[in-house]
Amino acid sequence: MESLFWVLLASAFSLLMFKLLNTFHRTRTLPPGPRSWPLIGNLNLIGHLLHQSLHKLSQTYGELMYLKFGSTPVVVASSPEMAKQILRTHDRIFASRPQLAAGRYTTYNYSDIAWAPFGPFWAQGRKIYLNKIFSSTKLDSCKHIRVEEIRSFVSRLHASSGNSIVLKDHVSRANLSVISRIVLGRKYFSESRDEKEIVTFDEFREMLDELFLLNGVLNVGDWMPWLGFMDLQGYVKRMKAVCKRFDRFHDHVLEEHRARMKAEGEGFEAKDMVDVLLEMADDPSLEVKLDTNGVKGFTHDLIAGGTDTASTTVEWAMSELIKQPHLIKKATNELNRVIGRERWVEEADFPNLPFIDSILKETMRLHPVAVLLAPHLALEDCIVAGYDIAKGTTVFINTWSIGRDSNVWDDPHSFRPERFLGRDVDVKGQHFELLPFGSGRRMCPGYNLGLKMMRSALGNLLHGFHWNLGQDMKIEDIDMEEVYGLSTQRKLPLVVVPEPRLPAHLYN
Image (cartoon, rainbow, N blue to C red):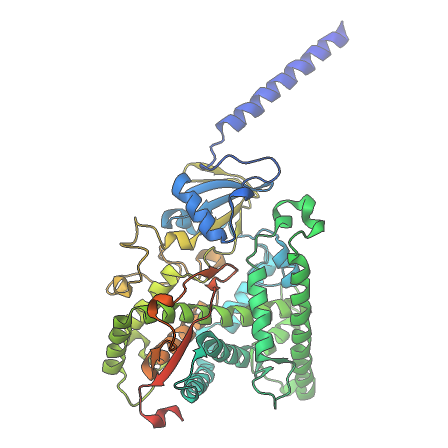
């Protein structure tokens, strides 16, 4: 009789727990979204351009949308208000990153700032970036490098006057030269056959293109872990291969820097950012030891982020401007008025060039380099706009959608720089309708350097040259298709013909 009592009691308890759990699941309010399939979730709805697929779905399901990628819950924010909720209101909760294959295999097992999970290592790295590498004092001390490389940049363009060029090749070379000298102390790539370096410029650019593509791909193994070992798309194999190539490069750089440190002994002074990182690695007071992989990971971020973001944005800007010659005329009128025709655009001129600034903002609105900000991870359960977001949910901010939100922008699909004139909207993470560098704790720490390089490149391209298309091309032939990756580039490079518009002596 006594045993029957315990059986009945256990049954009643089990029934009560079942009802309580069911009640919890029924009352949990998820954001709207499409019905998911077993095993694959909603991956069947995703095309080759992830951001555009998510944008299309958001037109049906709204500004905060719930999906499943395989077995992983995913939330997509597609409006300024929802971005603000994630990046400011609940910034701490969404301050981490999901552990995807790209971070594991291309950044030394998350030993960088971009992919590192929220915690002491990431916090220490961010502090090093802000205080030691991207401080105003440090950026000012490198100004001469940016000036010298811009002069070399316009000189090379002048040498190609009248000939068709791939514009991004020239902009990338200039940006990589600046970043290499600031971060590494010198250029570690050869620019001609006579130079002997560990990589050529073309090889290094190819490595960067592959890196950015692989850091943005939708790798099935990340979302369906039981398939990960098969590497069905071959992405992990490619990640390991490109990491091996970068590792050889980083080993060469670090070996050279350590040799100089050893040779100079106590008289050693840091001359570049790698020197700073190596000094930090020897600092016993650091909360988290910065090992060799950490130095490589941080260097990796600095080179890749500093090179690709600026060159991609400038290429998109020039693509849009060439399609609308009246905008180039308006820009050159401003440059003639402020700069004149006897010198180049300098960094001190930026505040006096509002239309050039508006062109860049409009480019970053319509063609954000990061069409989806690097994914965030919910560290705990949270309520956003009345919806339950569970711990472990991956969150995407679709800046491509935000830039096309007709509730925010008039005629959002048209390139109209004038919309920013007299409008108090910056790109520093405080205005959530324009987030090219993100916002909050995970905002890009090097945005100031990126802006300086973009403004200098675009300003001097417009100031120094007339721009034409090749003989067989018309404006309507300019293809504006995208290729998705961590940065979203033109599918076909922009090919143009430069002609000088300033006195000849300025190009020497």
